[in-house]
Length: 200
Image 1 (cartoon, helix red, strand yellow):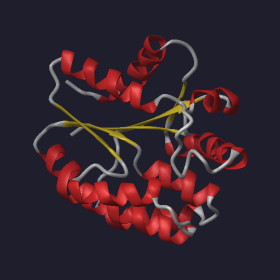
Image 2 (tube, rainbow, N blue to C red):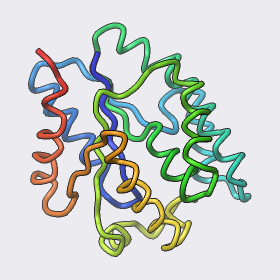
Image 3 (cartoon, rainbow, N blue to C red):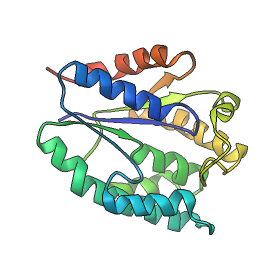
Image 4 (cartoon, helix red, strand yellow):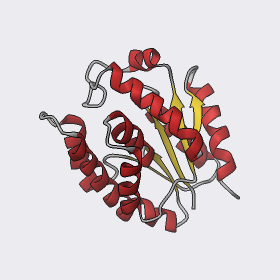
């Protein structure tokens, strides 16, 4: 079973790198399911809409509740079944996002968020977590004008998110990858981080 998670703050190029990684895995003969959080299931799509585009403010606890409900459904309906079938699952965000965004940047506490996430993941853990890292000003310059709730959260919030990833990565074995340079250059760095975890 190979479960790969690609992480990082807003504007670091996660979607592009997930696509390139999936292409490379399929070219190598792997059967791959590309998914994302929030919104990796039909039920999760409605939760994603609330989380990213709800016109009213969500308090941090409500935000976390929605994230974890999405994750519970995602693991039960998609991730765990596909891993059991021997399919490689590549996910754009998973538990590390909740630790960085809600645990640190929203101030809910890493241990609290990690325990609550563990309760809904039922032992499903990534084989490797790749964290794409860019300086805040570079990431900001990549964001479009039409921004979701998290992209609109402000410079201080995004600075806390990036710092959280960098602080949490060493103790949790996440691999920080420099996301500067061309998409192809970054993709090679991502592949170097992922390849040792693929097995035969």
